[in-house]
Length: 227
Ligand SMILES: Nc1ncnc2c1ncn2[C@@H]1O[C@H](COP(=O)(O)OP(=O)(O)OP(=O)(O)O)[C@@H](O)[C@H]1O
Ligand SMILES: [Mg+2]
Image (tube, rainbow, N blue to C red):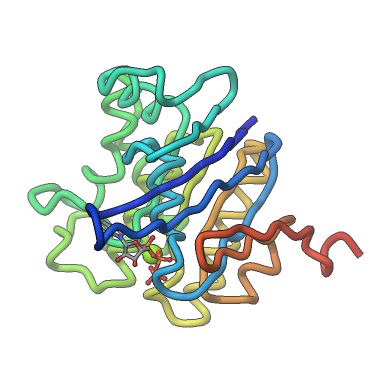
């Protein structure tokens, strides 16, 4: 479902130029679960931004389904993202002027879903925020904002879920619940789940582990699960 070929990402110019991702190659099947782990600054978020086509690579390409991302115009990419992806960013990117409910309903509203509010409200209940539907982002804690962002990413049941440290701001118990939700939704819709995490317990729930360090990626089948 996803094929990444010769993917290289560099930032900066001349002597300050840095190569964050160095010629990565991997493929994922529909329904795979992958944890990307590695030290801070190793390029995990950069890789997620490239998979989400929010950045263009310096070299190489990414194919999702039959589509090579670099062949799409910005408008086509926005449509492709909307139809196929659920993205949870490391910073939540909630819209401050909208309530939690309205934030979660955005993907459904855009898709013209007639029952957007009902579905958004059910999803907020699943992430434990039933009593916060009318709150604005500034009235929510960091972990609550993170859960709204997760609800928004999952509400339209995307085929590809990209989550950058989805439990990074949550306590163990809430984090565990959110992880359960991610894996439940993945199992229900056979979506591909790619998540970045520093939490090895969460990483170990994924079928594959991607270790990112010094620009290189080491792919491992997750021994605990494949054993
Ligand atoms: N737009 C940019 N311009 C210049 N350098 C950048 C840019 N984005 C990222 N970098 C650099 O690329 C490297 C990788 O950043 P990235 O955010 O992908 O790391 P990360 O693995 O997600 O780290 P963390 O675990 O701290 O979130 C960092 O050294 C960062 O400074
Ligand atoms: Mg990051």
